[in-house]
Image 1 (cartoon, each protein chain N blue to C red):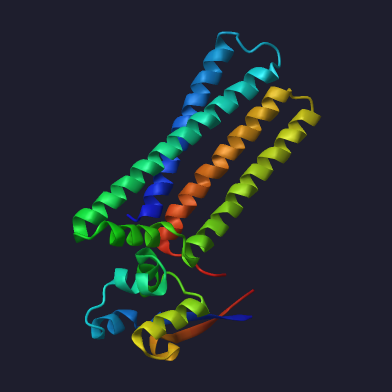
Image 2 (tube, each protein chain N blue to C red):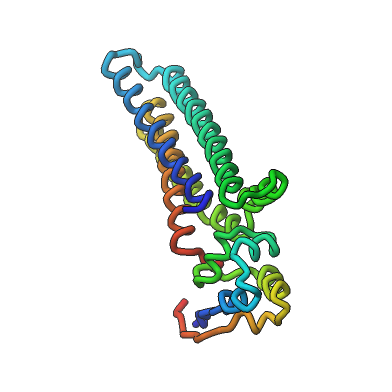
Length: 77
Length: 163
């Protein structure tokens, strides 16, 4: 039995408070594409730990302030 | 639609054109009796010809897509050429999500090609001709690439997980 984690993020809010930083600008600063930022923001893709740290670094916050586990449920193997 | 999705879609259309073209060419040759009993050279030549046509069309489409994207960036943002080139690098160099999608979809393509290869060998063993084998291998490669293209578009639309 594994726990399936649902990871939420606050990138949209953090972008808003960073002078409405664009997705393109964030993508350029972390060395990624805008498509990937859109996927992360909408929860369609969970980034690697390295990318998560880079995103947190851009906003000057900790990784916990960007990503959080909303809920988890049991998943059968 | 992102650049990668457009590229995958263009690849699908190209593949479809190549397969349809190949089928028309192969069937008409077969109907005209040009393919003598198990003429492996004919089939090898036909397949190589259509692979070459597919590669040329793909290269042309990629160049057109690149230029289109470049002009779009220049027009939209009123950027200098250096900044536009930098933006293009961000778009074109694959990041971790692109690599994950590529990894997952190439697995699907390899699986189809592998199944086609094994099926072709089995058919030869049970008495089918070498031309059947070569056609099944080619068509399984095409089906694998087609499903890979669909999977790429699906993953970009729906998302991809690390599992």
